[in-house]
Length: 219
Image (tube, rainbow, N blue to C red; front, top):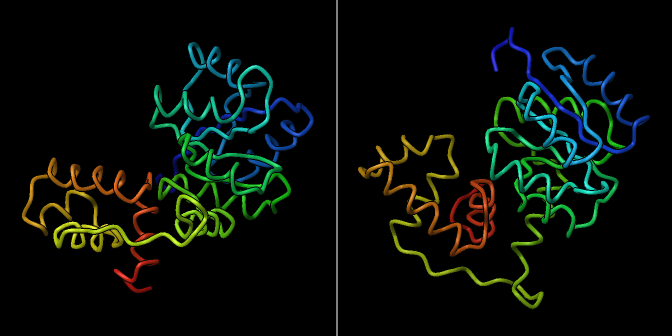
């Protein structure tokens, strides 16, 4: 997002008083504008058919008719370019992991400070994701647990997979990684998807956390 552009935001929450306060707060941030609101996921889908499409969607988790999990999943399938930020009072691990798996690119508590919301919007606009200490800690804990709650073991990786994983922890784009490994971009996409499945992660951040946990890269 350039310095002069404005990121379009929609707010999906069934609590009208909270929503109005959030609209005023977000509109007070330079570079962000709430373009419309919705009561729940079903309401949001209806409005998307004739309203301006947002860059960022703030989703409450607990909503009637269509909750945040379903709504995030629908956006991931139909409008993956819209970045989802989950808004919730729930700080439990299951809720966070479930929302991330549904497609949320960030997770923030409703009682967070305005500065954290501003940072979340900034990171979503510039990096495509916002992982707070809460979310990062949850993802690390998830990776640390095996299927029955024990320590997970490192998956067997080929030398090329290890090389790709290390490069994925850098700031290189996937195309730049392909050039460095002297491979086609489509081949790199294959490495990525294979590692997502093998390591049970769903994002580049998940790959990085796995690599750090198992000593493949240092921070």
